[in-house]
Image (tube, rainbow, N blue to C red; front, side, top):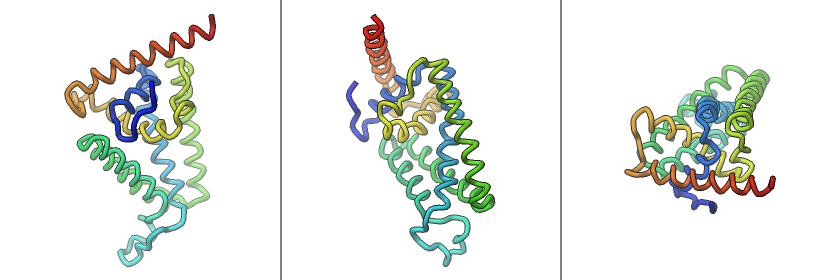
Length: 197
């Protein structure tokens, strides 16, 4: 499977989905991906300020820094990929930034990095167990780091919206994606078999 274009949701989703076809692995990612995003924003709270919000009385809580830029890039990317689900994902990204800012401001740096470290270790360990024990395939980030990190939060959101609400970005989206995922997994298994034979 070739590398997808930057805004090709179907190919992005198929690429990521090929590494997440086991239901338990998908559940593990659903539980742990957004906390990784959130706790990353907690650390970003302590980066230099880009714009001073003190005239608005928000200078000690909501700080326009690299955390805001990070959340904004994700939010805009998701809206461009799909207006409806992308807008929901964008709201979640910005809500994470606000929540992470409040948490970081209350914890302070010396406690915040310890909380973030513990949460990140738990979440990453869970995901690697999901891949090693249940998926039996290396994570997507080993093949395409940027795409894996960019798509992970949106992937788990779309994975939740489809069974809960029957949501598709457009009619036939999931059928097309599932066909691509099955083809990619088949190709991966054949290549794996050739290596061991």
